[in-house]
Length: 399
Image 1 (tube, rainbow, N blue to C red):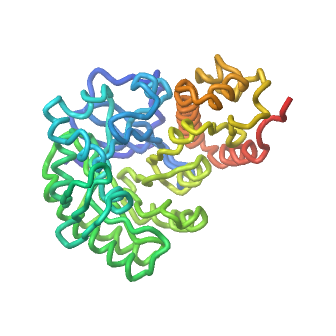
Image 2 (image 1 turned 90 degrees about the vertical axis):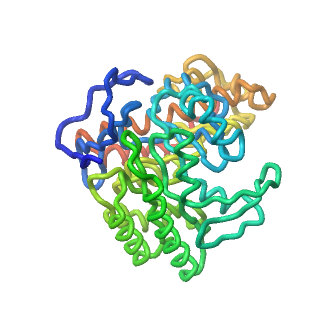
């Protein structure tokens, strides 16, 4: 693979959601365009389109972002989606998706897709797990069927899916955990990372990311980063966080973990998170994030706004003709009142999940766009301060 490049050039011009250049590079590369403190902005170029960083990736667990059409997801400003290897291997099956033309065609998403390795879901969802050096045997949470997942099989599944960014297979222990257990899992993950690298092979236009583990131990994180760097990956993820350790402990790790990874490769914080988690991660040098929170919250009547989280189930909204957020241009804010949103949430109407998921994803993508612009103009600290001030103010007063 050609070496990744960085430069001091400015950001690419703004472009409409869902736009993809007619001629894209045939290889994966990362161009760093500006820094402000530890915060970075740039572009990941893939044959299927550009990913502007820092980037938030909506989660399409089972080949869909719940309650959203692909065009609607693109309209929020998303450049890349995340698909889930564990769920897709169980249903409808990776071989079936390959026969039907691959995941992009299957779910009608022409842009880049990142797939996780399946390791986290095996550890957190599957029953009757048996972990060994070779891999993990588990029972499906859907029908109890037996499966054996190894680094080689994870690479094969992700190849069948056709994802643009592939994640190495790893073990992710829940925190808190004894340091000896975290160390054991990290070292197993590093051996699996080597096997993942070998099984991935040479696939021009596709990228393989290694995953740093090590819990909240600086020594273990450094050992993991050194092992991954020696193997060599197209990008590097920080795994094993947002698994029960709390924000203060997570930020404590992020104060040093990104700096342990190569500066010319993308850095991906897995499974994060809330808006303040995202801002804090970007300030510490993270380039990519994903989380189910905006879509899951949208299905339960929770809306993210610049003034914090709004619960549309609350009776205070039932006679309120004002928009959810008067600074937001999403369909929920542009065309509907708080009273209507409250009504459809309380009535359990499908449109409630559709509108609030769209709003939340729009808010997250607006947040990322604001961060990118702030980094490019050298005012990231001011942006973060204004973000915190807005959230501290709380929701608008009830009528």
